[in-house]
Length: 239
Image 1 (cartoon, helix red, strand yellow):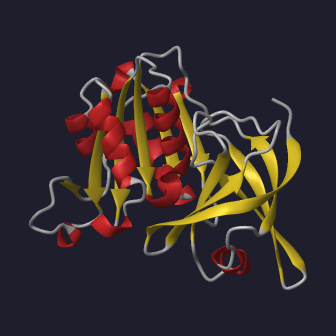
Image 2 (image 1 turned 180 degrees about the vertical axis):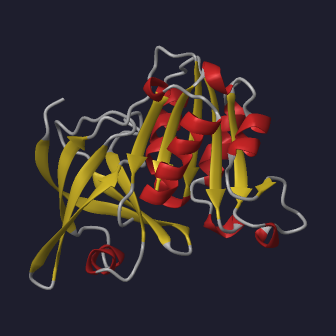
Image 3 (image 1 turned 30 degrees about the horizontal axis):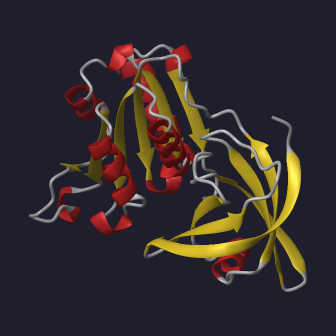
């Protein structure tokens, strides 16, 4: 697909968690992309143009809009995004990136933390809507239950697909309420071994903050003996 620039406008702003917002923009002719890719987003604020690269959290199967999702921080770009409302104009440069689902492989494992879930949500939704016959497991870490973005979507896909399974984990035992049904603790080699005993049969996808991605890729290679050519990664620098 060729990269192109599109002038469009916001159609909807959706709060995913206390500090994570999704922004839907009207789709235009020629806005084509693949699940897992990202886009350049430019917004105007105070007479300035502010830009950042953000992954699609929507899937190509979701028509009429494209969606990106951002953890809102104190940066000028975040503040500009937080001020967006339906009708406001933005510029998108798309598609970009090669963090893509390997559809010819039958088995997959996804490892993610925080807002790094966005391209994985895109892949899962796309695969589900297209009824791809995949075996997919997701281990998704967050600080608290309230920080889990797209929890309802991921659980709905796992319920509706025969071979999709999601495992939520909270960073510390102290963060796990008595009613918690998921895992407690950071994603580590032991957790991966327990949840995915056939790991070496799978393609691995890792997405999140750079330090987390570096740690998990090293863990996969050195402790779990996953070959480099079966590891896909995407860093969310400054997310």
